[in-house]
Image: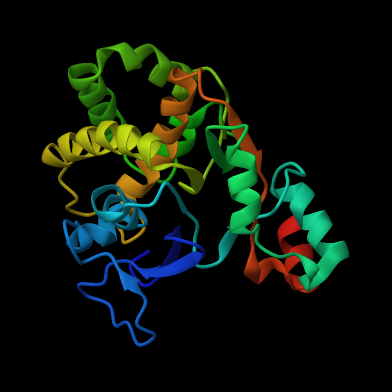
Length: 253
């Protein structure tokens, strides 16, 4: 989102970043996504990816990651969001974000840390789930761009989008080495920039304009599925606005 602060690893802590900084105020003087080489102007369409692009092009940290202004990794995997709702109902505000030290410890044995997979709806697959609220032409353009740029990824794209139900690791949240991010981002942004050249957003709602953020959630899963040599650790994600028991009961039911 254009008005959100996101988090990335800098040197020894989690650092807040204001994304879409070219058109958003920054009263708390967060790190911004509009310095150095950047795509801050694209934030309304690319969402948190303008922060990811900044990390790719400007960060010199050994390990880097991305979380949201209200979504954080918990320090272990307890399953998907409904398991977390039940856990939050019991624990309340005792739930805290995972520490950087814990993330670093996990990376000693794993290559990527991503969100615990979720079933994203009652649709048949991720393709149908996406087009319920968005345009199918954008998925077709994405598939065409992959076939043109990275044809060896097409079968994996089809597997993730058609044959695994609606299961995916959402939110574009991760923690990994900068080397892994460099490889992933070159692949990801080459695809998205190619899709952008073919996209006309006339008539799109504000929600639908967040297209590249939505596409990249699926593409992260394609990347990890294709590169099966990576050891992946899944951590459960929680939202800070779900720490209220009344809100949890509403969402659970």
